[in-house]
Length: 158
Image (cartoon, rainbow, N blue to C red; front, top):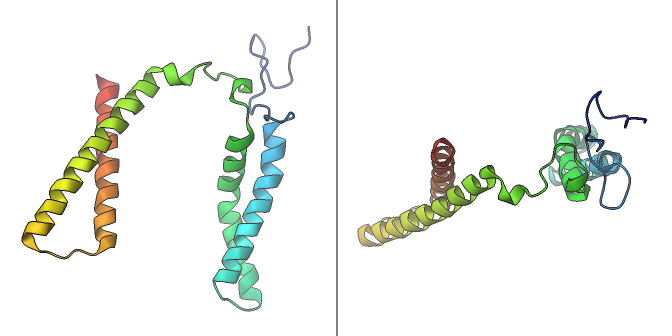
């Protein structure tokens, strides 16, 4: 019996390491060229938006394309991969213990954020203080991230 080229000796899971696409074929063979095309397009857009002239446009475009190449490839791979074809992937990840930790942490963080946003709004209203919107949004994001992180760690330990 021939083993799959991506498998190791003694492994019964013959699924490829990088998975297959939902459309057939290797997900990685679709993700790499499409991700590079998207990164080049993003680089060209950045070069145009920078308002640079001549060789500067090419430099801005190249640097931006290089910086976004891996994230673009990853995003395309996530969009096209058939999860069931990944080696070692759980059949029902929504039933994993990590998923329950995530659910509890996100629900608690949402409640914390609503509570603190309401209290903060009331405090600003009573004090008649004026705070720039960017600071307010930054505070909301920091509260939500901190609350989620703390709640996730607590759920993981308990």
